[in-house]
Length: 404
Image 1: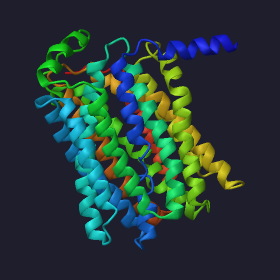
Image 2: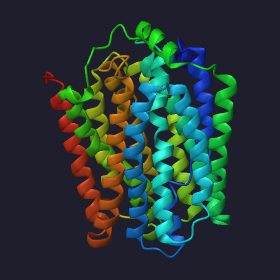
Image 3: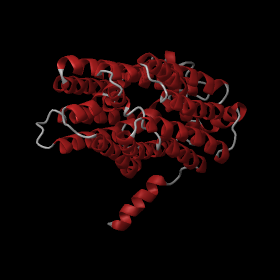
Image 4: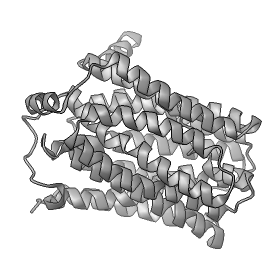
């Protein structure tokens, strides 16, 4: 039994290129400092702002992310993913430190927008880099390894963030900024420079199975996919905004307990996602797996309405279920849109995917906090669960849809 388990893990991690492993190291270092966004609503409450104002700050981060996704996607195709990754990490690190120095609500909103615009322009470039360093056979595994690094870093960052927040909230911004800058420097040292010409010459070798789309705006199946992704991600983003507030205000958990529970998300992904992807990849259509994940996420939010016999247990069960849903659905979303892109449009597809994710952050953060403030958390979790089911039905419908 032990030998079979070891062999399963060995197979799950085999076939990945050295560059993907090196890129995952960069992402791990970067995401170990990812803690500001998870604690932003609590930080705003700490400064004396309302829950609604805190949700609006996170929503503003999403607005900047939409802009960053568009710019990052365009520039990744025009100047190359290498310059975009390094530039976004360096400037993003500086902006995190600047944000921590802001005191007024207006200045926090303005700097949050600028930070997110710079920071999120990294995502399309990073997705393009992953596609460049992988091939059709190991692409989902490659995206999953990067996700593993991100979520392991997220787990470490959440636990560390809870500890730092209990000492001084400003430490969050310094650690987040410094890890961004360190990640940029390490990327320069361990990954060789890739010019735009090299990127376009080599990427064609990797993309023999992809469709040649003239523009993502003409790919109707992709556009429907983004619509359902918008619903799915709007629900998922509650974990960064309304869920921490709910844990503190209704479940009466401390910042340390919240950080500990949130860190379980990254730890579970680090332990099991690569194996799950290895077992599921090629066995079921991507859209069907997304549908399964959306149904499970609906269940996770309904769990938050379980009578609070033990607050810590309820919170832990919900986060663990969300994590399983995430592992089933999200790795295959990247592979779905990458397969529909070509070497000339990859950055644009990645940019639009990032923009949909960011738009969901705006919608989920602002409306979730507003709804909870007026109608209560119990009703919010029922509505979120319903939206998850709508996304699940949409993904399932797309299985038989033929793009125009």
